[in-house]
Image 1: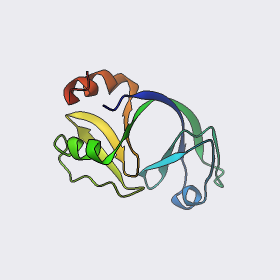
Image 2: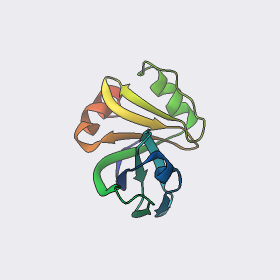
Image 3: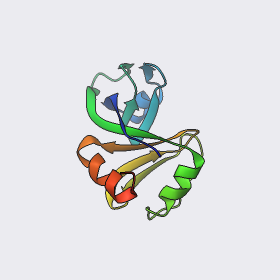
Image 4: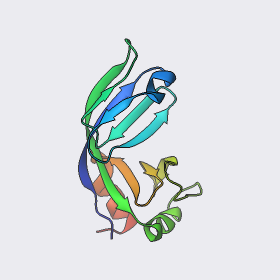
Length: 127
């Protein structure tokens, strides 16, 4: 059964072009492009972005759970959208009624704010 783990992250708000060329530092960084001008680097320790107006801030409020294909299929019953394991595909919305993001891949990532994790685990029957 998946389990949430705390993870360091860096949030960047910058021009879309600058985000396209951003250079992220860290081990196993996963990029969540949450809007055209915003990205969250899960596992990132730093980022170099070519935009003098960029906002770059450390983000400590996320938890992630690794998902295999079976886990993704089970989560599909708790979303209003069709899920995929396609690498890099980001899904945002509510999972079991709780705000969360799912990043496709092998493994996939379920990402939620730390404040919501207990409730999400409860609703998914993970505990």
